[in-house]
Length: 222
Image 1 (cartoon, one colour):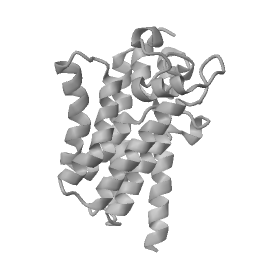
Image 2 (cartoon, helix red, strand yellow; image 1 turned 180 degrees about the vertical axis):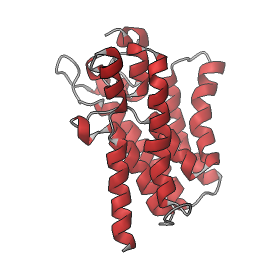
Image 3 (cartoon, rainbow, N blue to C red; image 1 turned 90 degrees about the horizontal axis):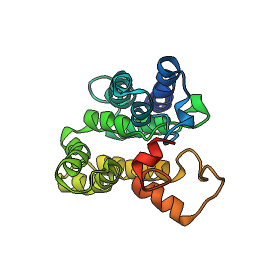
């Protein structure tokens, strides 16, 4: 019975994560399909760039607490007590759903807010490295591009989890999130650029800068 419940929780986490919140708000508030503007990702950062930060606030709240935290908490001892393995699987499933939404032709956002919510529900100390590195990097270093710092954060998450001596499931969660993040950046909803081209340089630029070109302002204005 627990196995069936676990499967339902994981599948449910993916389906909830698939809710295309940024796309819907973009349609209703801005009258645009944000997948056709800027980065092309249906996430809060692109929504902010296209129609304004005030519209992104409810999206971020939903992505953090409903898509990210809720499935983990349902699987945890607070509710069903299915064990840390299912909590981790539910957390990753929510992020995968956000990044590759079944309701939006497998297109979605980057999963940063959803990852934050899942990590918050799993272990607050683990959240520190994920949340603080981008903020500190942008504020106190010459490199102000947050995309680079988010990549650094997800790379360091498994190391941080090991240093904190967290359960092995949390280390696997961190590794899984790193792979999901890298896969989303590289594919960016399509392996090819707007001209139908694909190259090692394009994929590396996406991995590091989370966009097709290095200049962020030019990318946002597309």
